[in-house]
Image (spheres, rainbow, N blue to C red):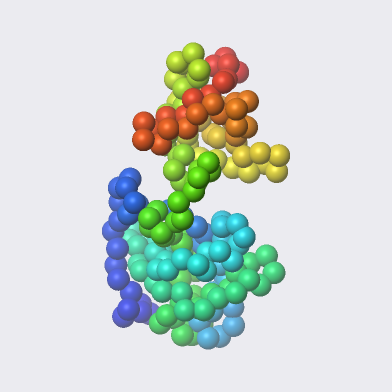
Length: 180
């Protein structure tokens, strides 16, 4: 059952209107259309601060408005406008949740992972290592996965490994041995 308030979206590009993934729908909660949300935001309930959400279902994006939500244990539960029963909620299972990049607050001296993905990585000696494929957490520090002639894992350690990030030029300068 598709909500009549849902707006089909096909959003692509690299600018402020590009979509940034914040989580996914991971389960059902109760019988009144509530959803369990796995959130990548820190803290997890921060995902509730953004509206609208864009849910990826199939090849398209659908615009949904969160109307209520709260943290519940390790998850977040949310109620979306127009999703009023368990069957409607079931149709949204496993949907990716994204927002426009322009909805995220600007940061000073910090970077969103989504802004780093796709950037070119170059050593301080000018050797190109590849592009940032994705990042992941290890507990000690975040790690850049750089794919070029081969895959490299570079720790996100400011001033030791990461020397400079220039989003306008699309480049990260690193102090890294290309043979490593």
